[in-house]
Amino acid sequence: MVKKIIKKILPDFLLQKVRYFYWRNRAKKLSENIFFDVFKRPIDWEHPKDLNEKIHWLKFYSDTTLWSELADKYKVREYVKNKGLGHMLNELYAKFEKAEDIDISALPQSFIMKINNGCGGALVVNDKSLYNNKDVRKYFRKQAKENFFVFTGECHYGNITPCITAEKLLTEDLKEYSSRLIDYKFFCFDGKPEAILVYLNAYTPEQIVLLYDLEWNKTNDILPLYSSNIDVPRPKSLKEMISACKQLAQGIPHVRVDFYEIGGKPIFGELTFTSGAGFMERFTEEALNRWGDLVTLPPRK
Image 1 (cartoon, rainbow, N blue to C red):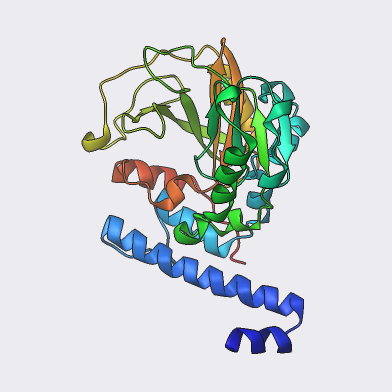
Image 2 (spheres, rainbow, N blue to C red):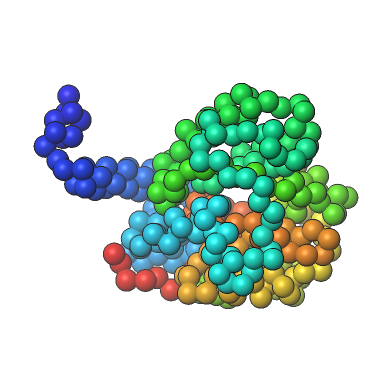
């Protein structure tokens, strides 16, 4: 009843603002609760210090319009092209506005499909003869309804118009180290890459996360509980990745730039503005504080 009355008395543009502030405040409270559960301390909103706190501050007190543009896994392709890095993009086979539009008959025998505002959940198709449109559409209808960002406070994902893309299925060169593509994730601060997270067997129970500096030396910034003795070879395209990071992250207080490497060539993955949603617990306090010092907060909106 109350919702119906509000809809009647408020113009659409005011109703949108009411909805925005409602979800923003709800997301902020959820973030505070989760942060306390993970780190056993409250977020210091007035004097944020470490990287996690500054990510939360940026989520709720900065203009995240650009985040919504660049966290969009489809729209970001144009941004990459405009930076002169179109050669690093994976081959795009198709874009579908909604799940009902999906038609795998027009796609190659193998491909990968993903929603542009999702977290994980990509559909890897090695042989499309084992799939049909009905099941694939059902899968992405479910993906579109998940809205994970409501619970992690990453409201900028909610401003992305969903679509589904189909791209070339890439295969890992270093299969002796990882059953899935090795993911090279660069922590960047105002255009300067500082650390490289390396994900092996990502999104599986066997996932391993390693941390390197820009010279490809393993660091001690991961807590012992999460560390591993595994050491992977330096990617052949490391210098190209670092150079691309400087261009893609220019002028942005903090962003994570992700790459894969296929045949010695870098392939752009995505841009992430809220690594771990601001709940990263695998790193040492010293590392989180050091990275936090590198984030210059903009004026509060």
